[in-house]
Image 1 (spheres, rainbow, N blue to C red):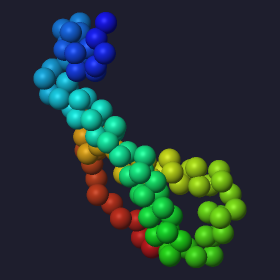
Image 2 (spheres, rainbow, N blue to C red; image 1 turned 180 degrees about the vertical axis):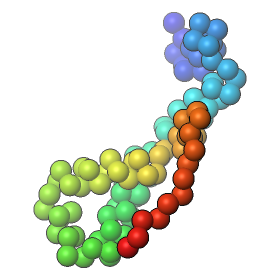
Image 3 (tube, rainbow, N blue to C red; image 1 turned 135 degrees about the vertical axis):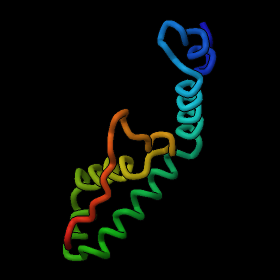
Length: 103
């Protein structure tokens, strides 16, 4: 049994219908996700919470008192700042609309 992801993907490419592009994207994702992802995730989360705190200072106590709120901030920060730029792709036949809600 192979011990690395690349060999596993290459050995099973026909059975799984994997193209070179898909294999390349997956390998890039694993490489990036394994390189400093925890430190980057923490940095982005702290930055996002501090930016949010500047916009809503009256609510900043939530981040100090409610750990479940901080966990939700971490999940949202991971969604907004994925470990790999490859993860930013859009699903097939999807149109992305740029919209800025009114303040």
